[in-house]
Length: 141
Image (cartoon, rainbow, N blue to C red; front, side, top):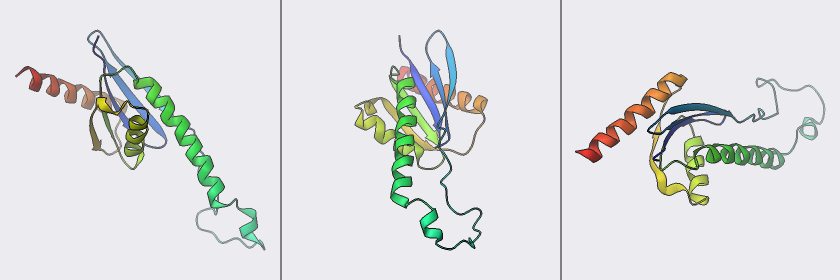
């Protein structure tokens, strides 16, 4: 059974649309990534030795990387059975996910990686449907 997947992704959430000949399923995965701690709204601290109160950048970066790896792992698990994958969204997350898929040797199913603005869940599902409908029409022609 042919399964296609389209997903809109940023670092906060992924909306995944799985389409098979019998049904269409939409799911959401949230990353639960914490905001990077540090200064609030650019305000300067009046506390002495502020540098000692904020964690070092490398430890924050390692924690963020670990959270992103877990998040991308959950997304990959959700689309693992798809033969064709369309990835779109704002920012860097789509490229990072593509790299994770390539590393897991699942990158051959990626048909496109496209930039996209924020979208509602119905808009995401419609874009995925339209993209694969056009792909099927091109193949049959």
